[in-house]
Image (cartoon, rainbow, N blue to C red; front, side, top):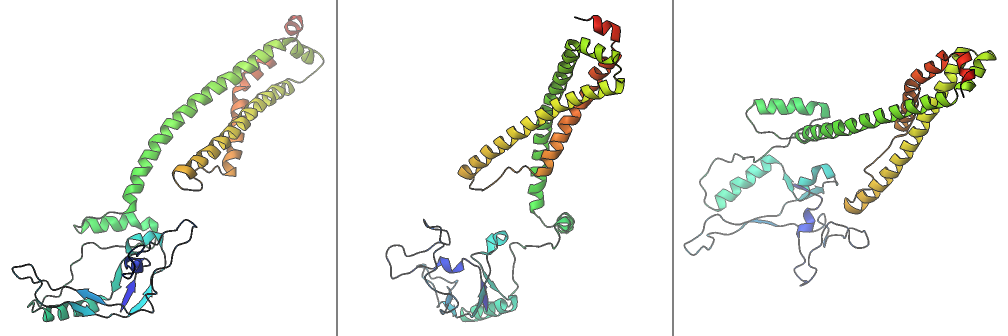
Amino acid sequence: MLNLGENFVYNFQDTKKKRNNQRNPYPDETGQIPDPFFNIMREKLIMYAPPNKYDDKGEPIGKDFEITPVVMGVLEKNDQNWEATNSVFIDITELQGLVKKYNKQNGIKNKNTAINYQDVRVKCVDVDAVEAVQGQIEAMGFDCYSMNDSREMMQQQALVIQLVLGGLAGFSLLVAAIGIANTMIMSIYERTREIGVMKVIGAELKNIRVMFLLESGMIGLLGGILGVALSYGGSWIFNKVAVGYMGVSKISIIPPWLVLVALFFSMLVGIIFGFLPANRAVKISALEAIKHD
């Protein structure tokens, strides 16, 4: 009894046709996957194993070992098990029995029917257990590879990219902060007489400070809104390029929570770097401010 991979039947050809005698499990021009030439669950499957002895002319000695197995089913499509799509699965006890029959038919006096494995697949129930299981297998003296190795390498590469982008973002933030502080200082300088008038008519110092902090915060918020708009535009262009060259629908995603955090952070930066100019406005002498031209 056998179980077959999802694409096993596509390995067969229609020998009655000279052209287009094989079909592939891939979408055609219309986007449809063509059906195989026959239904493997309804047709009889005959499998052959040639003899392993040859004469001086290279001709096989003996006859083919023939079996007609019962196909129990076809595996469902699973992109994670792509290696098994063209495979045949059989119970190991039945396989050992077939090896005995093959040896008897071909006169092979080998009583050892042990099965040698080229590799073994180990599936973990929890992804967090992969690293521990891999360590135990390697401790037994076996070579072991998992996607965790690739993930660690990708994480290291991503960390380097994040550090570079973080450095550029930090430098840009410093320039923006200096620009906000400079803008606020110039604003206070140009409005010195106005500040003096507000103090003379009885405006509280905290209200003057809050007024300038709100102004600097709004400058930071407007800068954040512009940055978000540019980010969405760049993300849209990047996804369009990805669809054309990588065949994926979306590779750049900007979650809503990140937008809110960016806007809050930009406004916070404006308030922080506007605090010093706001304090300067509070400390201006009312009489000197009124005399200022």
